[in-house]
Length: 257
Image (cartoon, rainbow, N blue to C red; front, side, top):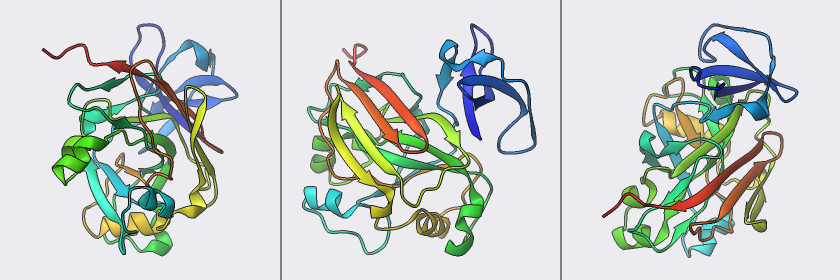
């Protein structure tokens, strides 16, 4: 099943489900009891939002060997975790805003895990039982600030630096799916999820040894090699085989002094 958050005309933003390019509401929430109502609206006619409002955005660094190599960094011996603020989260077709503080804003295409139930000290063998589904994410990064600061909070945390969407797919198999990223139709990134250093199960289990995972938390699983610069006017498209496509334009920040 595919869950969305959507708005029809000027109505309320609500959870829905998608079937054959049609969308319909659900009564309830995907994180609890719900009832599917009739799919009666073309999905092209509604506004899609980030498919979940995450409680936590947990990210993983250097989880693909070639990505670590392109930055001259060692592959971690254990998962390298960091956080992004929830204020960085936007949805499909929303604009990524290029802040004035950086001259090297880059894309990072990633598979995103959406946690479905609460867990702590989760065994890797049962970790997928805690997953509601999967979506697509972009861990946008101000690379020059990441190098300058020596830690990653500022570089990863600007508003709009975490696009996710277009929906949560509950039937997706994360073991071997192709991830591609195109900027203005130029292929930038292409790899399979099978190339991850740490699997989805291992990442969930490890993260749960640090913090309690709650329904609605999201886990970005790392990016393949090929990250590159984004500039105002660019259009970025990230596709994960079996999920779909996440598209976002890039605009200049017009709100600073």
